[in-house]
Amino acid sequence: MKAKDRETTKELLQALLESSKITTIRSIYERIEPWKDGKIRTTLSPTTETGRLASRGRKRKDWPGWEYSTNLQNPPKKAAKLDPLYEVRNVIIPSKSCVLIEADLNQAEARTACAYARDYNTLKLFDSGVDIHTITAARVLRIPVEEVTSTQREVAGKVPRHALSYGMGWAKFMKKVNDDADLTGITITAKEAKAIHEAYRQDNPALIRWWDEVTAEVRRQGFLVNAFGRKRIFIDQSDDKDQIAYLPQSTMADHLNDRLIAVFERLDGNLLRVLHQIHDAILVEAPYASWRSAAKALKAVMTKSIQIGEISLTIPVEVSVSSQSWGKMKKMKI
Image 1 (cartoon, helix red, strand yellow):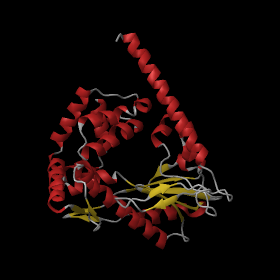
Image 2 (spheres, one colour):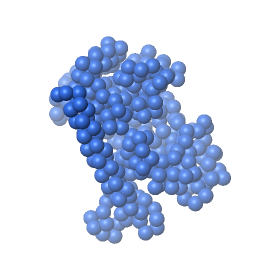
Image 3 (spheres, one colour):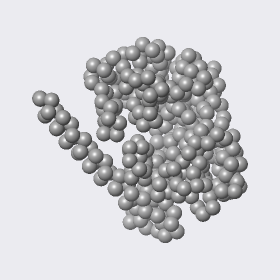
């Protein structure tokens, strides 16, 4: 294929991807329909393999008499960084004279995977303030760490870091990066993906050892038990990556659910009102006059150590605030 033809093909594929994304964003806007009181609702279900709450929608015609709800855990954060029109969360605003506060467990799964793997060196890097996702993005993009943008960190750092920590192969890793090319402009070749994959394995021997321990335990006893005592039986033992991902993912799910209950019991109706749980974060609203006190209390309740083997792990809590919308949250030092 000639260079001109390749460029034309690339432009055509880019246009198709953008068209598909616009269609998806439009459908999300259309289904975020408020109830008669102006509130947007969701239905949260704990019936997942890891215990993570799943946000689901419910149409009025499905369950007559019940309020309409929609999935509120999948607003497209990656696309929103590319174009403000894609920031669906901007339509979700706080109540009058209130602010939205979000408490997020920082790099929770990556830290938890390191704790299970007894990867003390990487845990020390986390404690020193180094951003692991930024380092990963710099490797993928072959640029200095200081040049990595927030978008690149998300789609070329965070995603690969999680994926490769759970044993993903180089081909799926390549696809994972290239699937977001319309957002990032970043693509990698098979040769580059193989090199990154191999370098990652060499740089993380503790993870490789842990993978072998996890799969051996499943073959020996048929199940795994996380730090909270959640047991999962693996009837199909062919998917090693699913087994490896279970412990960090279920541990974070149980930890966040435990903290959500604590926030509700200690703070809801007093300093704040619980609105939503989003994967590794909790969204609340508080009166404008007392939002700082509410944010401090929220962070304090969300901060609790987890005992994983001999390691006591405390996930840092980042607090973001906005008086405008869920899409305009700004990190605050609390």
